[in-house]
Length: 236
Image (cartoon, rainbow, N blue to C red):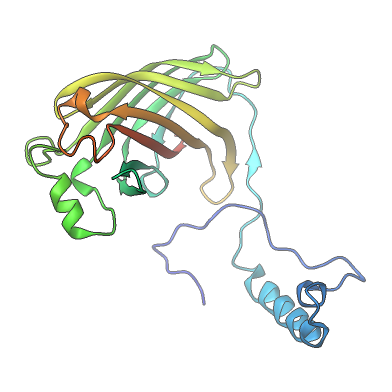
């Protein structure tokens, strides 16, 4: 089935046929079910051949630019996930986004500037009654404060020019507090489908609810909220 025209091609590792002499699929035999191995192998090879024309070539890595580059966040790949412990047992998780904004990075000079708009009124945990509760005035207060903001100008880079940490001010419910986001990984690539450079990664951080005036539910609902931010940004 061909993707619709509204869908963006996905960059990544291309699907390739097995090397000469190699078995297309040996998973079933490796698991002890040799009778299914020929069928699985033929089916797997057929799927690879059918899909090969739909998968673009591998995205190319890029050299460090000579000066600052301003990237626009890709809303399809930029979201905030939060986690908070509930009654000392399970962990409640939810997602907010898509996040919009832009980031300017000078990987040579090791400087950066980041500005994010986070639509907290889009909070989604998979449970509507919970989502409605956290939007109320004693928690996120999304009626009065539908958006949060993160502005950062303190960037730390690794030896290769990759972003390691971003520090700035996070504003929620009209209250600003310092926030650090540490990169679990960061990379840049040239996307052949977009014909543009893309940088991004996954960042983790934490905040305390009471610092933003959200003490409801303590101590049964933890004060600390863990943040996981996935981000991809596209060069001009």
